[in-house]
Image (cartoon, rainbow, N blue to C red):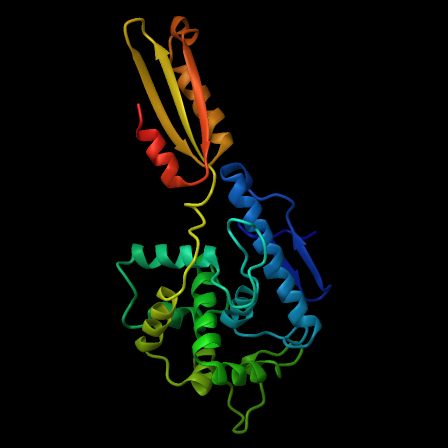
Length: 280
């Protein structure tokens, strides 16, 4: 339909009012169970974009700040990791919670200066990791600062076609940046905002999307006569099982291949598969 950058699996097209999606993403080979659930979440997210435009909350072809343009669909479109169903408005977004948790762990915790939230608000184009803080900020404002948030939505809903926040007519005739527009409705942006967002996230319960996926433990056992040799692998991917089997066989002498066997067992969670892999 239209060439898109690598990693984009779907998008809402404001000109045609179509939602465009790949039938299958590369994740389907790596973790098929998770891919199905992510596909359902993607349909929900892009569907919210379409609904918001069709009912005029976001006017067609208007340019909202990216954090709210993507954060609001994430707020409305949370789906269940286990059941693959819509959870309801404002429910914890399991995938975004997982991404945000890993993001802060990799950085040793939240930035007290509030850099992450500042970058998210000021960004004109979110990266793949930018959706999680955009959702987190939107969720915090919608749940903890409802009056200001509703006022902010009323303001951005006035942005007309082909207009952005930088072209809105203001009383003093001055264009607002994303940061200034945020400050106008929620106060000056400081590190306290990010701390409040993190505390809010910590109060939410969610299902770990990786923990609760089908995992496989694979054993390659070779009969040496008086003993056995065993190699073990844990994976989410059926395709990885076949690749690993070919690699192991290619390094096994031909006489031993006939005396070897692969044993594959599936488990509903990562914790269960780790325990199983530890058994002899």
